[in-house]
Figure: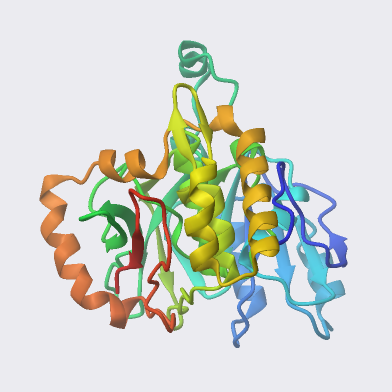
Length: 370
């Protein structure tokens, strides 16, 4: 198990930065463009982002030959191109892009997404807190929440069930996917990483865990940690996007990534005003981890150390999070219907269907709802 970072972490891979010497606007919102490949006209994508009025754009380029970068950086001087030397995963790309930004807010997008409604100035105005609101809350942060999730539709103009929620059912935690129908609906994590983030809150949270190689567990870790530490991830009807291609699959296979996620998020117990991992949980962890006793103990101890260092940042534990999650009454039927459509709309490639092989006494198993 890699050492769990206590602060904002960056990928170890090398990269080069080109362009980005000026700012196109002053809204407080920049864009992070992730590239999934495919034959998407780059100039068209950049023109659309320019028209939307973002302050700056950071384009994370996939490894390979880039014959047009010099030309594009001259045409779009407000775009900063990050040229990767090797492939890195979703969370690593976002953390890296954020390290090159200074704007209070940033919008994570993919090159196969198009903005249907929402301009940078309006987005920032909706998400920013006014000085009066900040004064009342005694909060120095710029945004109202950690992450604001847009409405996303597919190529058939159908709104996708991209909001997720944890559910405790007979001591089992499952992810429910449902469609955003109203403003401010909470979500466990931003689907596909897409959303408008508060940069200061994001960095203080530690960003995405670069020690996790599986994107699914990165998203789960980010979402659980955010909610356990008192942050909010909510949807908005103001911003609407559309996929131009197929929806990417999620791999929820149980592996060493899950064990790391488990120790950071599921195993801690919140008591009083702090969290900790009880020693009594080690036998169960060892029995189900598949590792030898020394390796299991090293990983367990590392998890306990990380929780101890961040114990006062916890506001609840996994059990209370799932029990207190609020489900709007008028959306319960929608969630039940989405359970039937998720395999088609949001494919999951996990060989184990996301079944958790171990948990704490209260949360013995966790399933990813197909």
